[in-house]
Length: 138
Image 1: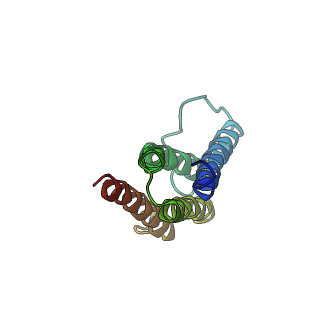
Image 2: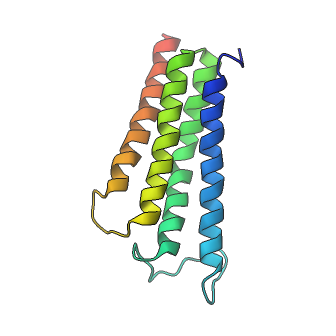
């Protein structure tokens, strides 16, 4: 069973690695600020600050990860299609990496920003994976 899902496991690995990198980038950028206080973000920061953007990128990923991991584990446990499980997980993982890169690179208050499209792609992949789980259960 586990070898059938190896592509899915690699996608999960990449997504978790991305989350860890985001956490390290956010912590490092914040700690490098003068008078940084652990656990407290300066309220005056906004999208023009890389510290703000790196923290928001990490927080956004944390907000999305429970549904991602839950859907991934459920898909494997119910025996959903190996191919489609991997496809949806890889779309999620790649979209989150692009979302991260765009959030780091583009300082904008505009909505939707380019990163918003990759947030939506990742969300759609997660919804599709959850739907696949539902169809598999039926």
